[in-house]
Length: 453
Image (cartoon, rainbow, N blue to C red; front, side, top):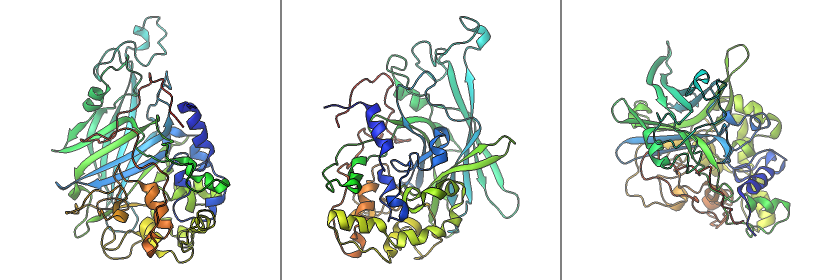
């Protein structure tokens, strides 16, 4: 029996998602929450504000000395969600934060701010009263007169210093790739996406626009907590058919690092302007699988407003893993439950010799990346766990299977207890691009196919 994307979304938002279960437990692992995959709708307040909701962060190095940063927002975008589709909020500051001295505080901050425009102006339109349409004919370029709704952005780079911060505008009024309205409206969407990739400061690149959600997992694997048979309900990508809004950067590693420090911490945040005109942080995300579990339900909204330097309170929930106890009881594993210093390294401090060369660091929810390309590696979707030092938790590539990695880590893999725990989804449902911004093209709003369960 086939199942529509809408039905799949309803199921996904009703279940505890992979991100809500796989980081080492804590009391929230068995508590009712509104969370779904990764950071998709993870806290009560942000669940009702999708334009401001971070979903995932990715960061990975290249052999040529460049680093790619990708952050996504707006979970569960139904491709056919017109007539307004999925604009960026104009009262928000979207940020990617970089810590390059291991104190869990931002040292370099990239900030995007968006503005809207409509073409033609209402007074010039067919009725004189405007139109509900996003476009009124095929769109073949970002400046096509048929594209009625448009967004642009300013991108600034801020260096945090003891004195006045150094703020530099690196892109002014850059175009946003529009939502993929449909195949008739946008017959060559790839060309529109390519036109939205902007180069600045030599070889640096920036992109803002819609993409297919790159996170892949089967949410049903966690039906185990409701009496299911551990791994029988697995193998189908619950996020297939949904899009997100993405920001992507490609910069030299020297733009991110400080002298003598190759490892950086990375997280995204959203600031929203309040009624008094001041910006307030209402969402954040670094590691893909921490906020949902380690942070109890009642303080999730507070967590979204904090800085990573304030995350030490999460340590006990990672060190003493309730999820490990649950896996032992339901799946027959023998994972250690107490004193899980291995999980602290993976999720809160970094792995010694890879992305925590000093073997210590401020425990915090940041994605830690060694910006130096690790030579001689063979790609493995399990990243460091699979012997590939360029993969998660050393940053996070689009292809990294963070659900399987986290499940196997919680199951005791790093404690000399090999296991094959996983959700049965080993790759994304759509191919990634071989070139920047690397994300898969968004699903078209004209797709009417159903997805098999």
